[in-house]
Length: 473
Image 1 (spheres, rainbow, N blue to C red):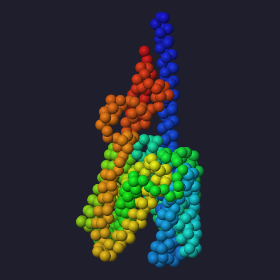
Image 2 (image 1 turned 180 degrees about the vertical axis):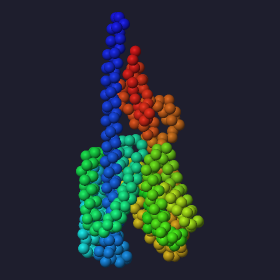
Image 3 (image 1 turned 90 degrees about the vertical axis):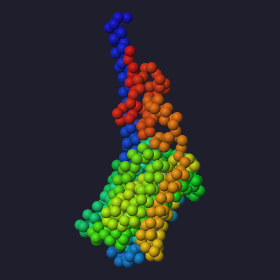
Image 4 (image 1 turned 135 degrees about the vertical axis):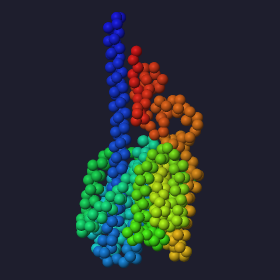
């Protein structure tokens, strides 16, 4: 065979191998695009839930004036919402486990905003109470369903992405508050305001429901309506309990603390709550990055320490600057705990994701309900500073309980600490079967099942993916 024929053969082999490589690249990018669509769709449903809740909250004063409710009467009516949430938790978990998170999330995203119209058109206290109860039930349904979807998306990514979903919920809450402020300033009645938000929610559902995750991750065995949680779920629930205890206290008492203890000017009374919520949203968007690098347990321990440090700082130094810094620390400490707990609960081996999330939510939400009254009772008996001191000490329970968590030996994130596995990972970073934390394996098995195939040159992309080149010559 002369030199010209040899060159022709080489060129033919090159194009054949190049076509196979292009096929692999197409497969990789299709998978990457599919994961991105799942994540965007799930994010949209979190946004709908946050926007709907904040839309209602922004018009509570208008509803109170319409029905001529006293503060005490309004408090009694508003209790219907958490009652609906608590009583529907087992039912929501069972529905998501039985029928899947996708249909339940879609149904919740349509009917949850639709209840806003009933709230706005209520003409009696009884009608408002029933509507609020239904609002709590449907809010809980979409909460359990969309978090189950988020658990599935996170398992496909192989790294923490749960905090970003909750960050979008916080961002939606902030957006809803701004929109509500605008409508109030323009004198637009709640019914028109709520109708616009409900229409927007339905439009988003129509645009994105097709891209939601079709199947749930984790245990898919049929679940009973009431399931006894195992020790891990109970532990995660207690971590959520202590964190939501602090979050509930901050939501209801931060303004009072700045007014009576910090003695802030009237224009600065809300500064503490603004600092808390802003840092909580910021922390959730940074949470996935931190969890990937620090690991779940360490992140929970740091979060508990920050909650306690922030509250004690505001207690021991009750001045405007120091109290604001303390509330910033609390906001950052609270931000990542619930997303982490939900993500771990959804990976339960003994319960379906929906049932596990419902169990953790039940325990955690008790803390959210108990926190504000406890502060009030202690403040009445002793002082508000002692109340915040106790809440700060209880917040450290998050860090203590996190030490008792038993993480799996192998994980797709920063929890893998075994030294042997680390040495193997460094020696064989290019193997799709042993991807580094936070990286997606390139599907080289479509070409060859032998990672040492002499026809393939393995490499890495700048984005952290795996690539393979056909070897010539």
